[in-house]
Length: 97
Image 1: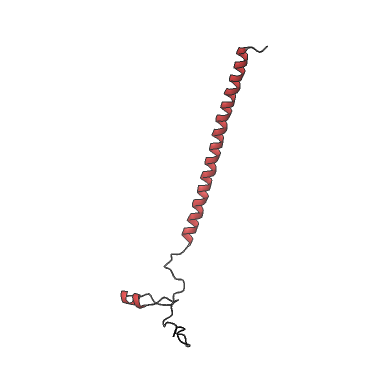
Image 2 (image 1 turned 120 degrees about the vertical axis):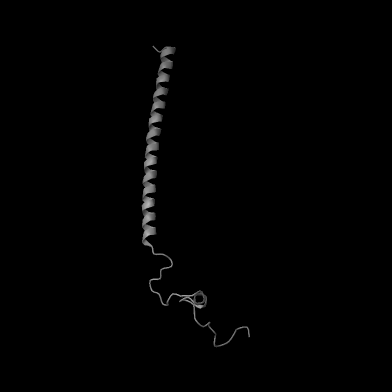
């Protein structure tokens, strides 16, 4: 027969078992999250390393069309390879005149 003492002993045991199960489940979940996070960080660092090591610098021109300027004056006067040496002048004239 259930007595008051056995009733509370049963509930106490149930609560203790639930608390222990919660503790170990939480520990396992946190370890799994930590492992996934470290794996994700490792993959990201590998991808970043591959992206940065393989790309050439922005100043490197694989097909240069001009010699590099030697003086500051040449550098100012020299135009880029995409800029026209003479500005475009429409043969029909200015549209506002």
